[in-house]
Image 1: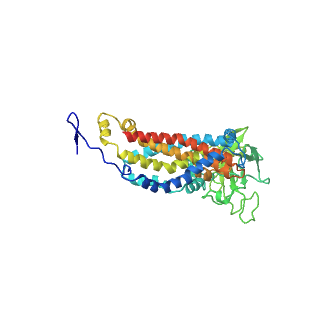
Image 2: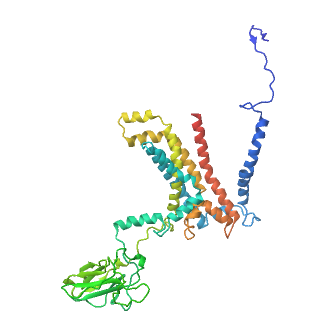
Image 3: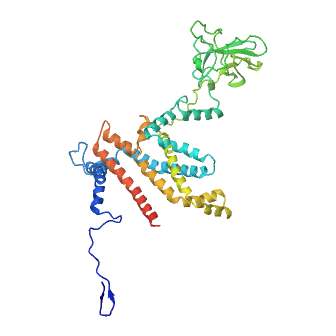
Length: 450
C-alpha cells in the first residue's frame, strides 16, 4: 500500500526481504560449489599442484636437498643440448603451425569446388585418427635411407634416375689374373693395347646375380678378324663353381650395357656398348688404343637423401607433423568458410575481381578469426611436441632434432638425470605457453563482445 508525501506523490512500498542470493541460473552458491568441488579438487591435484611443485623443485639441486637458486635456469642457457632444443622449438613454432594452417586453408577452399570434396577431406583428416606413436613409426619407415624400404627415397631416387643415368654394375672389378688393371678414378683399362682383328676379353667379377640386367644372356666369345676390334665383356663367375678364369663358360652372363672406350694418347677415339651377350665392336680407329671401362660403369648407385641425418632431421619430423595436423586445420577452416556470406564473394566477382583477388581480399580477411584460432592452437601444440621427435629421430641424430619436451624427458629420466634442470625446463615451457594462451583468451573475449 502506497503512502502520500508532502507533495502528494505516492511512494512505492519497501521491497520485501530476500532469501539466500542465487546465481544467474537460479542456483544457490552452496549448491554450485558442491558440484564444482570434485572438479576443483582434480584440477588442483592434477594441474595446480604439479605446476607449483615443479616451480619449487626447480630451485633445488640434482638430489633435491640443497637450495640452488637460479642455477638450474642458468644451466639452460649454458648447456649446448638445451640451447639446441630451444632453437629447434623456435623453428617448430614458426614453421609447423604456419605450414599446417596454410595447407588447411588451401584444402578447405579447393575442396569446395570439386565434386568429391567430402572424400578428399576424409582422406586428409584420416591421419588425425592415428596416434603420434604410430605416426612416428610410419614416418621412421618412410624416411629409411634404403630406397628398397623408404618410400621417400624410393620416389626421390626414381625421379633422380629419370634425369641422371645410374650405374649399371656397382662394385664390379677385375681379378689380378684378368687382362685389366686399375686406371684411377674408379676406371679400369686393358694391360696392353689392342690391334685390328683381335678378339678382346674383358672379364669382371663382383656383380651379385640379383643385380645383373634381367635381359642379360649367356656370354658369347666374339670372333676374331675383320677390320675392327671385337670383344666380350662378361661376368667371369660360374654359380656353383667349376668355371675357368679368362674363359667364357656356358653359364656365365654378358654385362649388357657396359660402356667400353678406346683411348689413344689420352683421347677417346671410339666407344661401344656391350650387348645382351656381352659382345661389342669397335671401328678400325681403335687400332693401337687401350680399352678403358669408364668409372661411370661402377660408381655406387644414388641412394637418395639422408632424411634422418643431422641436416634434415628437423624438417623431416616437421613434415610428419604437418601430415597429421593439416587435416585438423582444414576441418576448422572449412567450418568457418561455410559461414562466410557468399554474397560478398559474388559481389567481388561482379565488380571484376579475379579468383586470386577474391581469395586474398575477401575470403582470407573474413576467415581471419578462424585462422587465428587454428594458428594459436597449433602453436601451443608444437611447444610440447615429443612423440614424433623421440620415435623418428635415430640415436645418431636425436641431439640435432632435440626439442624442449624431449630434453625435459632426457634431463629428468635419462641416465644422468637432474630433476632440478628438468623442472626448470618444465617451468620454461610453461612460461612460453602462457603468452600464447593470454593472446588466445583476449582474442576470444574480444570476439564475444562483438
